[in-house]
Image 1: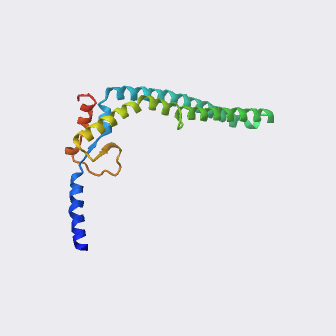
Image 2: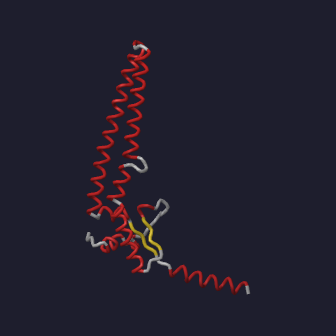
Image 3: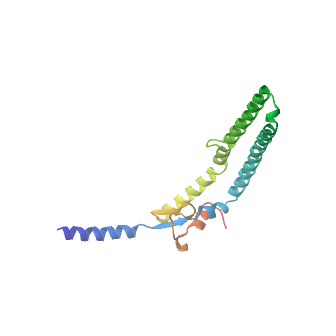
Amino acid sequence: MLKYLVVCLLIFGTSFAKAQTYAFIDSDYILKNVPEYTEAKEKLDKMAERWTKEIEDRYAVVKSKKDNYQREEVLLPKEEKEKRKQEIEKLEKEAIELQTMHFGSNGDYFQKRQELIKPIQDRVFTAMKKLAKKEGYSFVFDKANQSNLIYADKEYDISDAVLEEMGISK
């Protein structure tokens, strides 16, 4: 009886495994071929560059003030020392707040990325999902975001088909 059960499980298990089909996409490749993504990424990169420069400039001012303070500290009266320390601390705090405002977990960069990039990623996901259902794929892996995907045969790459599903010709 047990042998019969094992044989049945092996037969049905094997046929079930064979019934599952799979494919993969390369989301980096797909996104690079979506013109809106390239434009959005450039816009986001320019904003990030501008914000980074603004933050770096603030830290440069803080460093300059600290350097001046350290050079003049021995000559300053106690009240002036305290005043300058407070000014430096205030400038450091403002620089950190600015950095958090732009690049924090809910900062401007994250918000702008959600606004510009996420709709495009959603379009890719929708097209991939539609194609997977139409072609009968049980699994679709993303080559670009799988650190444990060691090998993928190009035969199973449906990235171009996803682009076609999105109405983008290569």
